[in-house]
Amino acid sequence: MAYSDRELLARLIQCEAGGEGEIGMAAVAGVVMNRVHAAGGEYARVGKGSIRNIIFQPGQFVCASETEGGAYNPQNIYNMRPEEIHFLIADWAIEGGRVSVVADSLWFYNPFGPKCRNNFPTTVGYWQTRIGDHCFYNPTNAYYKT
Image 1 (tube, rainbow, N blue to C red):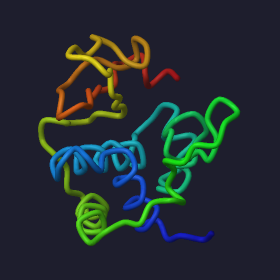
Image 2: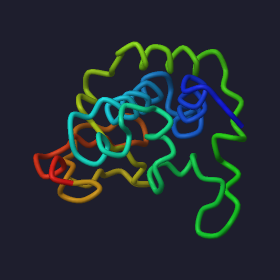
Image 3: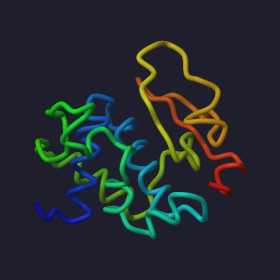
């Protein structure tokens, strides 16, 4: 299906953070847009300023994959039915809106526990904040060498 960037972002927001409230959804949208606008490193090379390239970069968002570990992934962006709030947050993020405590975060993940790791995915990201069930990570200088 040929979704617009806006709809892809709205679907990803719903899928990745639909249960995290407006701030959690906005924070996830901010991470996507931070990757789109990354000044260097992997996301600048792969994304090339494209929301679509960032969302569909292999291995980045579980929700962008129809299969995980060889099995069908029912929680994927194609099965989402975004509502007005998801589109409003997508528009806000595309227009430059960011959650200030997320800062320059390029990664988020759900640790399925009370503590966030100090670094994620490796030493290229350091812990910035937690919003709901998600931990957010800013890039270190090492990221820009990726």
